[in-house]
Image (tube, rainbow, N blue to C red; front, side, top):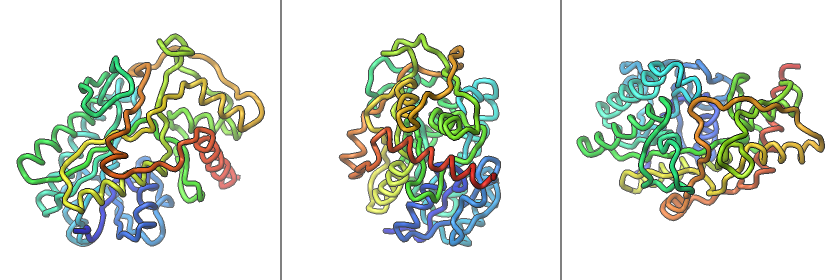
Length: 331
């Protein structure tokens, strides 16, 4: 049965705002809960209610669920910077695990039993075998990955004990922007490669640092599976439909199954720009595994997910177009 209203936590952030757009495009009713610590009010469409507050506030969550007749939750609110998690681990466990548990308890207490969780490939750590399937042993190598891994376990236990049905989507590297220009990544302090390269490309940042050129990969730089944010948003709509059909709790990788090295990505930027991109090499960052590439067969087979934006050049072009838009707003 279709949920009456979808609560999207963190819906004013990068990924959450794209999922809100996908839900609205599908004709769904949405309410957003976001503390705006990293999200932006103007990222939420005018026809969507935004409640400012924390998912760690159980009373507020319960009030939102009751007032808006929420039937399902998509949870994006959290901290996502791997190197930061290494130096601020307690912040990550509080925000990504403890607050998420508070949210879940409030949902269950109000009868909301459909939950979609924004997880990460960081739960796998640095596996020896690529591509990575969902049954690969989980061995995070940083607090960010552990904080997400812990909440995945909480979801599994709550499912067994309370009848919760959930989907955990393990993102690989999310990039790009809405092709129609309605949303994109707004943080000026982002650590994502394609975001930073876009800033360099449009002149709002002087250069990009390549962290490590001595990894055991084809060119010595880290290899990642870059997935367009619009395709990722569609995966969340498919996950919701799966639960509404009565589907069982599942875990899915969200990636294309193709790895790109940092230097490959930067070369794509140079091809689009028609000139070199200013860059420098720097020491490795703490907590970065050499390679993360998804085995994406399960989500395509079970949810019917069909990505439409797999071309790396297209990802780069939408990211750069969004960055130019942000620059024009400043000017």
